[in-house]
Length: 270
Image (cartoon, rainbow, N blue to C red):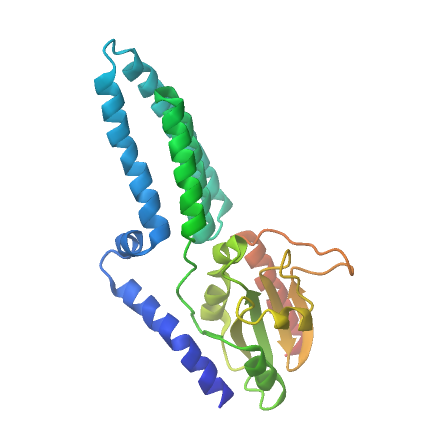
């Protein structure tokens, strides 16, 4: 019963992901349908209108040359940062978030050449976007399921369907959790089998469960806990003491370390 309920809970998200993947241009669909991306696109494209108006109002032509030099510098800096992000092999959500941050900073630097008030207007506009729109998380579930704390407890104790459960505790109010939201689905696609299952618990819906699992809502998210039946055998990030927790940024590199740990653990116990 609990397994069926968990699967049903994940069905809407899975269907939404499938519809998005079946779209001919999924990135275009996301840019139009997601307020976070749509508002950023409007802000960036509005620069061309502001640029044209400023150049048209400049009689001497000096602004055009100064602005062109600053734009070339901004593009070169962005390309360097773009390559660095690719080399670091971070998650796609992290890559997008950081790229937008760099683009916004460089846009402000360019608009300062045109007018200080224009730069201030863009700054306030980006603040408003941050306040009203949130970066969407990864929509796919892979072979994982959304669970409630009661469902997880039932799956671990009453009728264990798998010996191991790897569970991600997260909240969509956290930018770090959003940027790492593709990690568990990708792991489940590779390693899901009869011995290990994958689950996701949104602590934004069940905040009281955080204390039960020893998770701080402020600095421990996302947390990945590996259960052997009802016993916790590992967690990431690792708590080193009662007051300190080692919280590395979740990247492709840290994901590979975690996968290597799991592989070694399973080899020893199975």
